[in-house]
Amino acid sequence: MAKSKSRAGYMISAVAEQYQIHPQTLRLYEREGLLMPSRTEGNTRMYTDEDIERLEVILKLTRDLGVNLAGVEVILNMREKMSAMQKQIEEFVATLNTELARNLTPPEPPARHSLIPVAHAAPNNTESGGRRKR
Image (cartoon, rainbow, N blue to C red; front, side, top):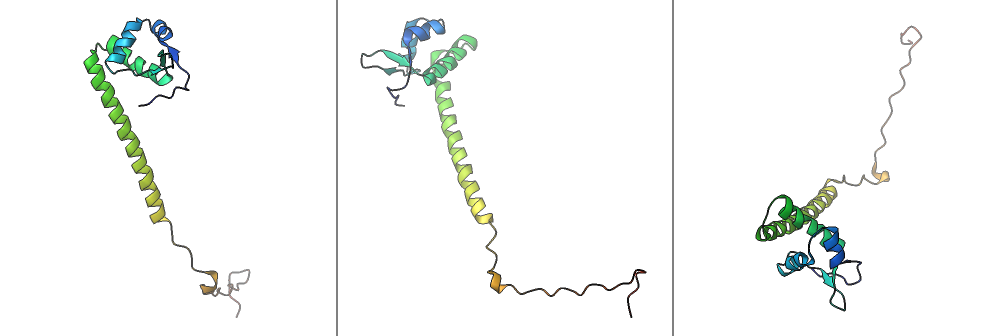
């Protein structure tokens, strides 16, 4: 997943302070492949909003649920696969709906000149008493 260098980001010190973790912990997450911050020209780590969201998931798993880093890696990989599958399903459903709409569209009515006029019945001539004139 390539990160654009033009996107705004947060320096490691700001992220570490915000989440009350040591910068070495963020470096460890990077070494383990759990986080992949972009780098500036001067090789400074820059964390994007997506990196921060991923960090929040990592911290939830490790702090709140007691998952070790190997488990975090498995869970993150599964989440990515599930997200990709969800996208494929959504694309499939959209394609299916398009095809169904195309096949369920009623055929065009025949040209107007090909219609046969329908003769209208003569109005029922009745008197006020409901009897027919004779």
